[in-house]
Image (cartoon, rainbow, N blue to C red):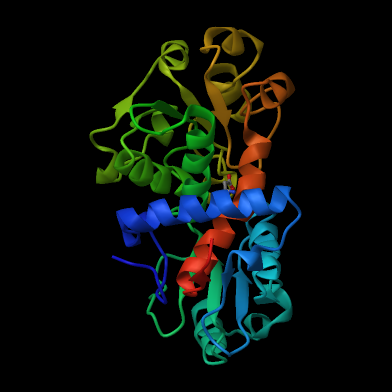
Length: 311
Ligand code: ASP
């Protein structure tokens, strides 16, 4: 397991040392950023070749794409954007898979891939970073979340992390479960019955049926968006019913621990997953997660592209 010059598809691809390295590098990038210093003062590309990154985004994205794009700029990697599938040969009938393997023939240094399917075969001819793959995984988001927990709590180890909402369709929660368990957290979830994950990965994870009890238990609450685009709301309950039973609002905020932290990978639909008060509560680190995205994704790129590290 190593991601140097290889594809990074799942949390399983990372070895323990690499998780530590990513966090250490992210900390350095964060410090350099606060000092308005260049990321290139900490590392440099180990090649004379100009580096470029193909950002192939076949699903909507805001935070992930822009943070990868800024990370590329900060590291001197030229970002090439493939965003509008409707103005590409896909509109002429070429499949998404075919388009992607065609673009790999142009030999970008790395592909940053947001994808819909579940069939695409990853190989290491060009390293591919999974930037959100269907309902499968979103490993850089999990790294951001664990890093944010570590910053707030000192460590992830032994922290009680509650994942709340549409766990069944969430790629974020799959990656988080794997990473948080590896880092020694205690993970549980609370979801409507129809959104309980069926993957064996989740079979031994505690499932709370009572929201209030789960909120009192948690050191970290990670809310998830209802992934309507994946199920068209055929989940046996309406958004209003979801809100009535799983929403983080005024009453729920009073129940959670005073030092509990609230996370959300975004986009957060205010009024569904949580109220405006919860989003802006002093325990909410949702904006910090967005900022940390830049540092974690810079660290991942520097590792995969085998940058020489100076700091
Ligand atoms: N941004 C995350 C993802 O791409 C979460 C979400 O969309 O709800 O999976």
